[in-house]
Length: 91
Picture (tube, helix red, strand yellow):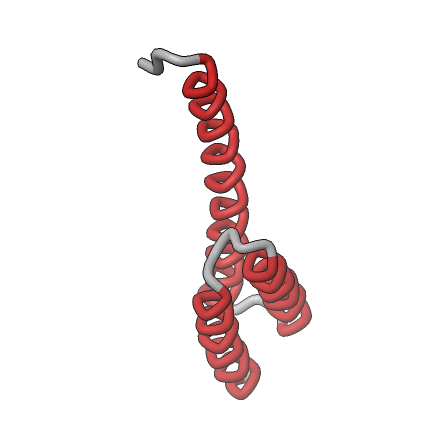
């Protein structure tokens, strides 16, 4: 337990920031899993493309806002693009 007022405030701030960071990362995981589910279910190309675009958009935003490292965002985007392009070749 913090002994000083400033330490108590820092604890409150840290817990709020932690919750915010976890929520943003969870949103990203949900988008990535949704895209993978659509691919596994052989959904239409337009549905998969919409999921791909939303996932890439979220990755860009999280990378810029430093919720995740920019290189990680770039790497994930490349992986998604590879998966998406392979899926569209099959159709």
